[in-house]
Length: 137
Image 1 (tube, rainbow, N blue to C red):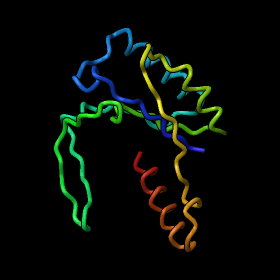
Image 2: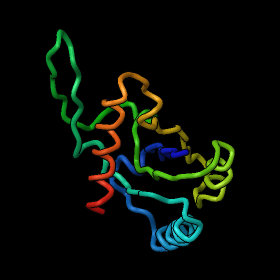
Image 3: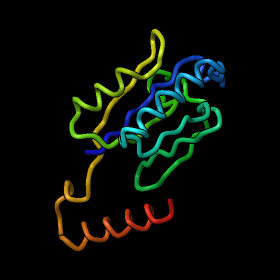
């Protein structure tokens, strides 16, 4: 099972405050454990929402709103994509993440092509696309 672990933004991440050298080192150690265990598929930090944009559809048309976005608690500062056997294993791994007080992670299972049902040719199309993406990495 694949899970996306969402690192919630806070005032510091939205202000563009970077982690200290020590915090980077601790996160590097944690990521190395995830990689050595074959759990980590991807992971990235995201720039502050001031550098982003939101698209909202209404009446079938998108509108664009440039950041920053005011509700910091609803924003994402980074993510991991991990592959584990269960949600419990994902939780177990993420309890080891080197965060301080107030940090918040959200763990969400990723849909697999089979989860969508529908015609088999659409699931096959999804698998082919994923294989092409994986081949580029």
